[in-house]
Length: 326
Ligand SMILES: NC(=O)C1=CN([C@@H]2O[C@H](COP(=O)(O)OP(=O)(O)OC[C@H]3O[C@@H](n4cnc5c(N)ncnc54)[C@H](OP(=O)(O)O)[C@@H]3O)[C@@H](O)[C@H]2O)C=CC1
Ligand SMILES: O=C(CO)COP(=O)(O)O
Image 1 (cartoon, helix red, strand yellow):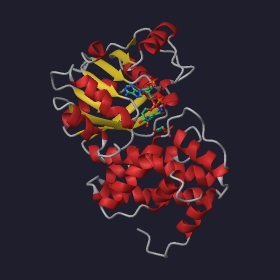
Image 2: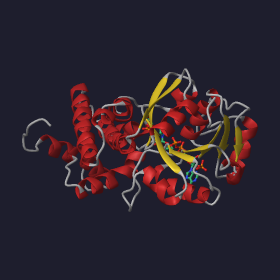
Image 3: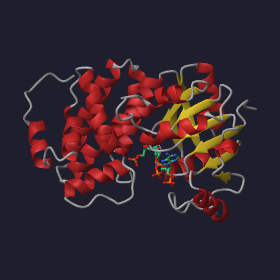
């Protein structure tokens, strides 16, 4: 029996809905919070969320827009877009009086501050115990109960283990870690790199280019991660290499799909959140502040901002001075 019996998920998008399903499957009492009262009422009555169509939300999950009710849970999962995580935690903070675990489930880095998600939680809710969940996990797969493994990190190992016990089930297997920063870097960087690989695939550059970009992308992720104190085993683990492989190989990924459309010269899919678009400029700024070169991510940022064409960016990457592989 876990001490963390009740779980509230803040943000009723695709990922929040999938995570609510995970927690219910693990035997927790679950509340799914949507910011819009009408939206919450519609999900509660139809047991379906248009942001994750086709997934039945079991009746045991309470769907609400009452934040005070959600904040009473033993642990909170924040599944808003990364740039909205601070706003959501700010609202929650006034309802939090004890050291409740708050698990960031968004993948990104905050604009302006260059802060990772758990740093934002620590600032916005100083009483809370920040944690981070990340890894190769498409919301659809997870909600359907397909086998998934992720990393769940907290600075206190006992807390990380308790969170794993609370959410784990025979179809959802979290591994615990204390390397929060390593987990956060993997989740943020892989979205930017998936856009790059999507562009290459959309441009029909071939399977060899896809493998090369994914690998050199991993070198970037590792370089930045090591500079920021991440552990090697985290970067090569589920939340690093694992999520990079998933996202750089499947059009099911919205980041990959964005790149695919750009590479083909088509309109990007409308209304789909691709976090890499928001992470790219801040990832570059963060790397520059550490004197780290991220040529693939820089190419993505310059294509997205219109500073470079796709063809010029590809040519620039391929004509960089030859160097040792590292
Ligand atoms: N989808 C996936 O497979 C996975 C996603 N993630 C990560 O999860 C995060 C969310 O993605 P996802 O669920 O897919 O995105 P969606 O676009 O499906 O949903 C985002 C949700 O966040 C809500 N929201 C937006 N701003 C706020 C706010 N200020 N306060 C509260 N709620 C807010 C939106 O509400 P409204 O409906 O009212 O607009 C919406 O329900 C991203 O960082 C993503 O990288 C991680 C792993 C897997
Ligand atoms: O993070 C994800 C899978 O691990 C979801 O990827 P996308 O946001 O690119 O769809």
